[in-house]
Image (cartoon, rainbow over all chains, first blue to last red; front, side):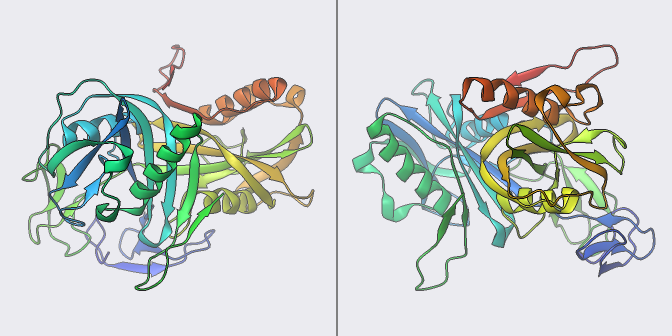
Length: 188
Length: 188
């Protein structure tokens, strides 16, 4: 951020009075431009013993499989975001069951949420950000071709807990993956 | 938003190719400036049968009581945000138990989350955004002087569920309050 989006003035990075961290502040009009994490919201659309996945037609992770999801938009609720993203990416209609996972990724300023959901019919197909959309049983999940860790962990928990018949909310934090290092997940 | 924060160019509002809603786009460098909801994160700090509340020293809702909470910052996790805000506003140390409520407020592009938490000691006091900080039993809660609806609803659910000994996650949406109208809450 170099210019003020309100007046076009030059931006400086400094700690405002009564604050404790550096902010982007306009040297002309004085407006403080706060920057905050963004929410990525998706669903785990379930039909009988299967879960609906999308193969990505966009970067990052082009060609990899993911649960339908994307950035929450202004003017909507978290469940509306999950329903909209599932419709946009998989052309699929769902009914939300409950919040299932919330992973913070502080190194990229994102929080990823997935809701368990019931797929309402089999009229699905690829939206413009998907190459293909398909139902997978647990044995069929392409574990080595999944796009993002919050997707992988949500699916792992889902299938484990489906076995025992009880679903818990999963809240955790994901640290960066360094080449050669094993990713670390911290739960509450 | 009138000016591009990257290059200072003029901003226009239009629907980009392959998108379905109007975005702020720079007419000079072409950067799309997405705007997304912000997360407000707080805690329900519990000591024995009491909950810690803060009386606000800032607008909005100056002088009203609230649970400690505030905007999630870049570079932190959701639980770190709850712990930090509780320390900043109530000078109090907590241990997070679990996520308790998540309310979307789409009319102001916010999502409010509260975590149940254990207050670790009695060394609390007002931070710079609080006039006073105090423990309240259920009978003492100043219900008519609470600052925000997510705070009120989280506290109402908390005390009801403490009675029956089981806590559930509450996910809902709050619509605007019009003068004279009763606020509407929609749960999943």
